Length: 108
Image 1 (spheres, one colour):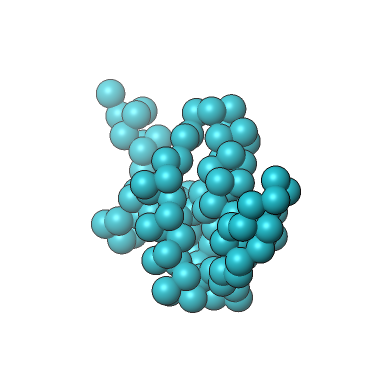
Image 2: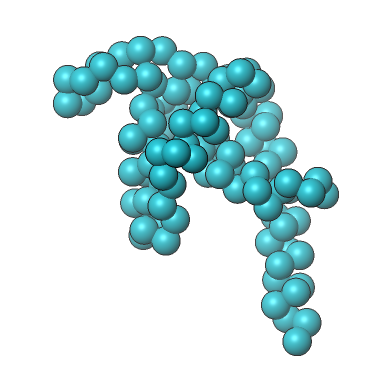
Protein backbone atom coordinates (compact mmCIF):
# COMPACT_ATOMS: atom_id res chain seq x y z
CA UNK A 1 0.00 0.00 0.00
CA UNK A 2 1.33 3.42 -0.94
CA UNK A 3 2.13 5.98 1.75
CA UNK A 4 -0.43 8.46 0.44
CA UNK A 5 -3.43 6.12 0.28
CA UNK A 6 -4.89 7.72 3.38
CA UNK A 7 -4.42 11.15 1.82
CA UNK A 8 -6.09 9.87 -1.38
CA UNK A 9 -9.48 9.83 0.33
CA UNK A 10 -10.46 13.12 -1.31
CA UNK A 11 -9.68 11.72 -4.76
CA UNK A 12 -11.79 8.69 -3.95
CA UNK A 13 -14.73 10.84 -2.84
CA UNK A 14 -14.58 12.99 -5.97
CA UNK A 15 -14.16 10.07 -8.37
CA UNK A 16 -17.00 8.13 -6.71
CA UNK A 17 -19.27 11.17 -6.86
CA UNK A 18 -18.62 11.60 -10.57
CA UNK A 19 -19.21 7.88 -11.16
CA UNK A 20 -22.57 8.21 -9.41
CA UNK A 21 -23.68 11.49 -11.00
CA UNK A 22 -21.93 11.13 -14.40
CA UNK A 23 -21.25 14.87 -14.70
CA UNK A 24 -21.26 17.67 -12.13
CA UNK A 25 -19.82 21.09 -11.38
CA UNK A 26 -17.58 21.66 -8.38
CA UNK A 27 -20.23 23.02 -6.05
CA UNK A 28 -22.48 20.07 -6.89
CA UNK A 29 -19.66 17.65 -6.07
CA UNK A 30 -19.17 19.31 -2.66
CA UNK A 31 -22.92 19.28 -1.98
CA UNK A 32 -23.26 15.61 -2.99
CA UNK A 33 -20.47 14.51 -0.66
CA UNK A 34 -21.92 16.55 2.17
CA UNK A 35 -25.45 15.22 1.59
CA UNK A 36 -24.55 11.54 1.13
CA UNK A 37 -22.37 11.52 4.26
CA UNK A 38 -25.02 13.31 6.37
CA UNK A 39 -22.55 16.20 6.71
CA UNK A 40 -19.89 14.00 8.30
CA UNK A 41 -17.54 14.88 5.43
CA UNK A 42 -17.34 18.48 4.25
CA UNK A 43 -15.05 19.22 1.33
CA UNK A 44 -13.88 22.83 1.12
CA UNK A 45 -13.35 24.70 -2.15
CA UNK A 46 -9.66 25.13 -1.30
CA UNK A 47 -9.24 21.36 -1.38
CA UNK A 48 -11.72 20.45 -4.11
CA UNK A 49 -10.62 22.65 -6.98
CA UNK A 50 -6.89 21.88 -6.78
CA UNK A 51 -7.79 18.17 -6.68
CA UNK A 52 -10.08 18.53 -9.73
CA UNK A 53 -7.37 20.45 -11.58
CA UNK A 54 -4.82 17.72 -10.80
CA UNK A 55 -7.28 15.02 -11.87
CA UNK A 56 -7.89 16.86 -15.13
CA UNK A 57 -4.12 17.08 -15.74
CA UNK A 58 -3.80 13.34 -14.99
CA UNK A 59 -6.55 12.55 -17.49
CA UNK A 60 -8.92 11.13 -14.85
CA UNK A 61 -11.62 13.73 -15.53
CA UNK A 62 -12.54 15.91 -18.46
CA UNK A 63 -14.04 19.34 -18.00
CA UNK A 64 -16.40 21.44 -20.09
CA UNK A 65 -18.02 24.79 -19.48
CA UNK A 66 -21.81 24.71 -19.23
CA UNK A 67 -24.70 26.47 -17.55
CA UNK A 68 -25.81 25.30 -14.10
CA UNK A 69 -29.39 24.69 -13.03
CA UNK A 70 -29.31 28.28 -11.67
CA UNK A 71 -28.22 29.85 -14.96
CA UNK A 72 -24.57 30.35 -14.00
CA UNK A 73 -21.61 29.36 -16.12
CA UNK A 74 -19.55 26.64 -14.44
CA UNK A 75 -17.00 23.99 -15.25
CA UNK A 76 -18.62 20.53 -15.35
CA UNK A 77 -16.51 17.46 -14.69
CA UNK A 78 -16.95 13.88 -15.87
CA UNK A 79 -14.90 10.71 -15.47
CA UNK A 80 -12.74 9.44 -18.28
CA UNK A 81 -11.85 5.79 -18.86
CA UNK A 82 -8.61 6.42 -16.95
CA UNK A 83 -10.68 7.97 -14.14
CA UNK A 84 -12.84 4.87 -13.88
CA UNK A 85 -9.72 2.74 -13.62
CA UNK A 86 -8.30 5.09 -11.00
CA UNK A 87 -11.57 4.83 -9.06
CA UNK A 88 -11.34 1.03 -9.05
CA UNK A 89 -7.74 1.25 -7.82
CA UNK A 90 -8.64 3.79 -5.12
CA UNK A 91 -11.57 1.69 -3.91
CA UNK A 92 -9.32 -1.35 -3.57
CA UNK A 93 -6.67 0.68 -1.73
CA UNK A 94 -9.27 2.27 0.53
CA UNK A 95 -10.53 -1.17 1.58
CA UNK A 96 -6.96 -1.94 2.69
CA UNK A 97 -6.74 1.34 4.62
CA UNK A 98 -10.01 0.56 6.40
CA UNK A 99 -8.77 -2.92 7.23
CA UNK A 100 -5.54 -1.48 8.66
CA UNK A 101 -7.27 1.19 10.72
CA UNK A 102 -9.75 -1.38 12.03
CA UNK A 103 -6.87 -3.62 13.09
CA UNK A 104 -5.28 -0.70 14.96
CA UNK A 105 -8.54 0.13 16.73
CA UNK A 106 -9.04 -3.46 17.83
CA UNK A 107 -5.41 -3.86 19.02
CA UNK A 108 -5.85 -2.25 22.44
